Length: 165
Image (cartoon, rainbow, N blue to C red; front, side):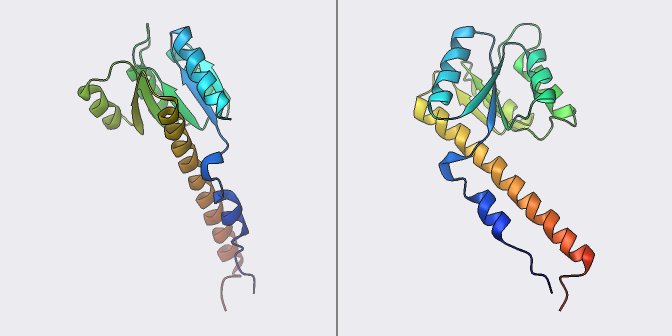
């Protein structure tokens, strides 16, 4: 009889505050982009950048991205349109998005949650709050992946009939 190993779950969920992951930071204001990337990079978080909604879609489709920090106010394709496109695309629909903007109206917070964002972070933001928010969502992604892997392992064991006494 073959027992399902718990090593994978233990290994994959020991992320703590050091969860590896890549964050796509999207903002049309170069100074905001550079500041955000610097704060996250200084905390050991890998970042990719985009300055337009269409660039966000292109990067998210072609690079492994674990979280997207998305500005709302951008020219041509704003954050709302970008979020809708991310949610409609099978390649990006499961990537968590945090709306990250200066427009801190309550209506925007409500809309963000309704349209599929996982969080809303107003700017300006304290470094510790930004890093904590990002790490929380990266940890959630890592844990979800670990659970998926354990589920696949269990399915494999059950398909081979090794789970029966």
